[in-house]
Length: 243
Image (cartoon, rainbow, N blue to C red):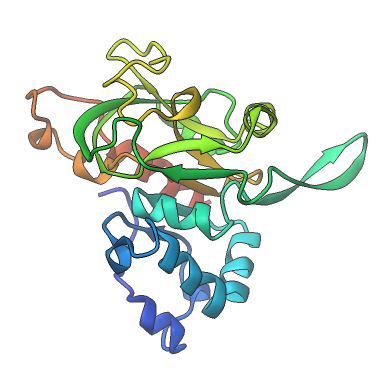
C-alpha cells in the first residue's frame, strides 16, 4: 500500500546466513513481544542483533538505507544502541563523530504502572533529522499498545542533546496538534518532553512507540473519521528507500 514489496524474514534466517540485510532496501522491526519481553522489552532481540548480526546491520545502517522500529522494534533499536546512535555531522568545516550516548535513553514502564491500549495523535517534529517525514502534512492518529513505552533520558543534558541535534521525530499531541505537555492520556505513558519517537543523526533509523500499521485504512478508525492515516509514515520511509 505504501509502494514497497515487503518480505517477512525470521531472525533465525538472518543468523543462518540464508538471507542477508544487503538483499533489501529497507528494514522494519515490527511490534509485538519478542522473546516474551524476557529481561525487559526488546532486550533479548537487541542482544541477538548485537551478538550475531552487528557487522551486517551496521553496514546496512551506514549505507543510508532506512530502518523503522515500531513499538517492540523501537525498544529493540534503543537497547541495541542503534537509537539515538552515532552519526557524522560537519562542524566548523570539519567532520566530527557525534553521539548522544547509546544508553542515555531508554523505554521503561509506563508512568501509571499498567498496560496502555488507546488511540493517540502524533505530530512530526518540524526540524527532525528524519527529513523524509517532512512530506507528512497532517497529524497521525493511531493506537498504542504497550507496558514499557515511557521514553526517558539519563539526565537533562541527554534531553538537551536530543533536542539540539533534532533527533526527536514524533511527539504526542492533542487532536488540534498542541503539545501534550505530559497530560494523560494525550501522552499515554509519561514520556519525557512528550517524545513518541526519535531518529539517529543521519535520519535513516527511526523508531516510535505507537502503531501506524493499525491505521492504514479509514475503516480501522474507531471514531469513523477519515484522514490522519498511519500509512503516511510508511509512504514517507518507503520513498526514502526508493530514492
